[in-house]
Structures are given as structure tokens and as C-alpha cells.
Image (cartoon, rainbow, N blue to C red; front, side, top):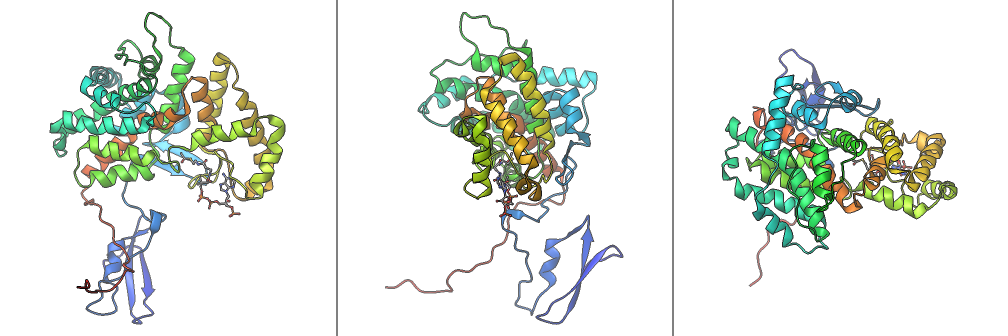
Length: 427
Ligand code: ACO
């Protein structure tokens, strides 16, 4: 096996007594090297078994860095706290896609490009309107993203760098329009054309809530808060939906189809839907004085404290800290959501309790975000839709990185076959 003088792992196969030297690179073994470890000529070689890909690095990436033990999240090296404070979501989207923050001129060009592509062919709204209004808005969003593939057939040229760039701009520009259409269709409202005078987040709020003959101003506090929430949700390295994006992209499907698939992965309650659950829990608790008894039930294993704990963060989720500050700003403008008092009390008790301390359970990104969305009059079934609007820039950055990575191939994992041996169909 290739050692080349670098770091290696020497292992002995108890089946054969043979020793094997495996190359270690960036703290990883190459899974393919295991194939050379065989018991005989007819043995296809050793594989690694990793359901849920818990300990498998599927790519080398330069986009997002997470250190879960220390509570660190950085996009292209910049701490999320600094980006949320000093940069807009669209600047962060540019950073994720291009690797650097835009210069003044690049930013002007980027905003101009995004603004040029905000509109969507009305045919797609016909598709959205064909859904019953009882349908979940994620079903409408996913279908309408896939429909864009049919309207942009040149997108299949994924090796053409100009075409790639155009589809990236289109997707980032059009997602808020599609999301607003889903929201309005569910309420029997006609779509509102984009307003290019407004910011990305401001235009999104406008397309959702604008009422004919009313000239209401978009609240700058809510616009800023939504922009921060978009930044915090823009990327989170190799999570379930991003992995779906890379895997679909590995077949060289066009980016509309890949983003539709990534959004489908996000739609599940284990991934994008947790903030809906937090609101349900807070409503169920009902008042501050019932928090202690709820914590008791959680500790007795009767339920989970929603919005607490994370597979990666074993410390305070850095996004939750920023969201908590943002919530305070929003509530100054909208009035306090009565559920906030319950959330703060839950957090206070949980952070002092041995059960949560021992298990390293801290508030995650979803603990306060639902409260902010609710204060903005955004209904719970739209929470995952908003997550998709924000995450599209991360999905596309990861897709681009995949296409440029010479070590990548079509994704095709192995399996351990435990089914029946050969048998014959009875006559
Ligand atoms: N409330 C109470 N106990 C918890 C919680 C919780 N929220 N989360 C974990 N635990 C306990 C488990 O019961 C377990 O205890 P044990 O060792 O006594 O059996 C221990 O902590 C470890 O839990 P695991 O389930 O092994 O942790 P895992 O990393 O697999 O789960 C997860 C992470 C799914 C996020 C979990 O913490 C959870 O269910 N949280 C609530 C749901 C939630 O907020 N999800 C949003 C995540 S953020 C996002 O996806 C954008």
C-alpha cells in the first residue's frame, strides 16, 4: 500500500496473520486502500461499514469549518459572529461561492445580477397554483425548483463555467420569489412581483406580505433580523441536505434538480423541521411556572427538550448566541412573544442542571429562531422554506467545489448483502 514515507497505520489481519500498512492523510485512511486487505484471490477485499456516514469524510472542503467541542463556525475562515454583524447575507453568499468577500465593485455587480434574475416565469406559478392549499409549502417549493430545470435546458452543461455561474445567480435570486409564491398560494393570494428597490430580505418580506392599495414600509429591524438568520443558515458543511446536493450533483444532474433534491432532504423533521417542534413544545408548556415540571419529564426520558443538543456542537451553538441577541432586537420592535419568557426560563434551568451539563446539551440554532419567525408573522410551516432560501448558497458552493474536485466521482456506496442466496422461481 502507498506509504511514501508519510504517516501510516499498520494493522494485522487476524484472518491471515498478514500486516498491512495504510496511508494516513489529514487524519484519514483512504477507504479504497482497505480493498487490498484480502483473505484470498476471490475475496473482494475489506470495506468499511458506516451507516449514517458518522465517521466518513466524503470530500476535502475549503468552505465551512466547524469545531463542535469549542462552538466554532466559520465560512471561508471568517467567524460567523463577525459575518453576521458586519456583512449581509448576499455578501456571505458571494463569499461561499467565490471564496472571498466581494470588493466594492464586485458587490455592486453581484447585487445587480441577483436583482436582474428575481422574476420567475409565470408558468411556474401555474404549477404552484395546481397544489391544494392544504399542501405543505415545501412540496410546492421543491416542485417549482425542479420546474426551473425544464425552463433552463442549458443548465445541463454543468462543465460550462459560464452556464454554471448563471444558474447559481438564478437560483439564489429566484428562491425567495418561489418561497413567497408558495406562501401566498396557501392563503389564496395572487403573487406579488419582486421589488428591486429593496434589499434581498426586504424584498422577500414584501413579496410575502404586501397587500394591494396599502403602502406599508418594511420594518428595518425585521429586515435586518431576517438577513442575519439567512447568514446563519447559509452553510453548515456536510449535513444531510448538502450531502444530498453533492450526491445528486455527482451524476452531473443540473443544479435545479440537485437543489430540488437537497431541499427534499431538508424537508424532514430530523433536519430542517426542528424549529417548528420548539414552538409546539413552548406552547404545550404554556407558562413559566410549568418549566420545572417539563424539565423533570425530559430528565425522566419522557420527552426531549427540543432546540437543545446537536450531533456536532457539544458546546453552545454559536448561531444560537447570535439568534438570541437578534430576538431581543426583534421583540423591541414587535413586542415580546409571550413564549420567550418560557424559552429563557427553560434555558436558564437546563444550563444549570447536571443532566444537561453532563451530556453537553446546549441550545442549538433552532431554539430561538422559531420565536423570531413567529414575531415576523411567518407561519410555522414556512420555517423550513426559509431555511431552504438561505441554504441554497451553501448547497451551490458545495456543488461547485464538488465539480472542480478531481478526486470526486459519481457517488456509489457499497453494501453488505445479507439476503437469500441464489434460488429458483417455482414452476
Ligand atoms: N433533550 C433531552 N435529552 C437529550 C436531548 C434533548 N434535546 N438531546 C440528547 N439528549 C440526551 C439523550 O437522551 C442521550 O442521553 P443518554 O446518554 O442518557 O442516553 C444523550 O443526550 C445523547 O443523545 P443522542 O441522541 O445520542 O445525541 P445525538 O447527537 O444523536 O442527537 C440531536 C443530536 C438529534 C440534535 C438531539 O440532541 C435532539 O434530539 N435534540 C432535539 C431536537 C433538535 O433540537 N434538533 C435540531 C438540531 S439542529 C439542526 O438540525 C439544524
